[in-house]
Length: 69
Image (cartoon, rainbow, N blue to C red; front, side, top):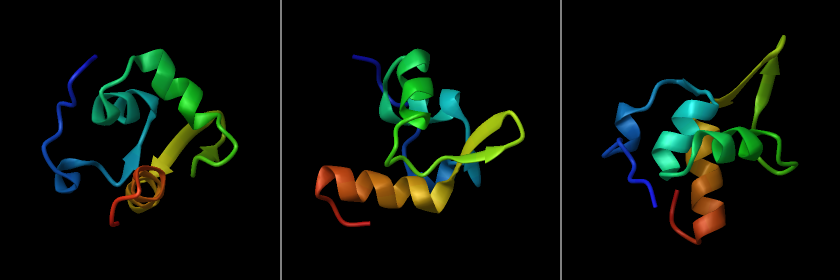
């Protein structure tokens, strides 16, 4: 299992791409990319680019881990 390179949510950029999502979750880049295409994941399409707003990502993690947001 890969290890996250981020130590807190404060270090994250305002918008996360697939690579950043993968680094935060400690998964492979391809897994991060696949997650951005999941139906319930809060991804935002801007042209051909897919990003996730930081706050929506934090809320998604909280909902899917049973933790507090």
